[in-house]
Amino acid sequence: GDAKKQEIGKEELKQRVALLRRFRELLQDQRKRFGEYLDVLDRQKAVIESGDTDSLVHHVELEEKLVSDIFAIQKVVEPLEDLYRDIQRVSVSPASAARTEEAEIPALKNTLEDLKAEVVRRSERNRALLGEHLEMLRQEIRALRNNPFASKKSIYAGAETPSLIDIKG
Image (cartoon, rainbow, N blue to C red):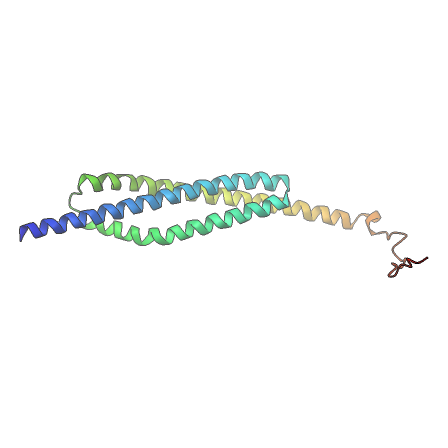
């Protein structure tokens, strides 16, 4: 009967190591995605300042894809995190294989929290910049509307546009 308990212990250990490894990989994936997101936000800041609308659209699309990737990974991370917490609660003394996988997890989680906070900060900065840029555009439009020369009609404004051309002469 004792050998049977030992087998279950080894199998459980293998499952635990696999879970911890997968959890760590997903957290590393998240860290990478957040790093990419910060790069996009920095490039987006420069684009907002330059006023290049086409590039801004491209950066917003990149940002949306990264956010989508981050949420997709998060959906997988959450149930694994619950399992990880359960393991932490019932854990006696993990074998060295599990301990090395486990050792990185708290640091990864802290790094992710820092990256999330930084993403929020830079995203808010870009949103504020974009708001300032839009306000400048509104002021330019108002100035153009109030320009007395802009409201004058062209001398050709009343002329009819030909619809048929006599090509025979």
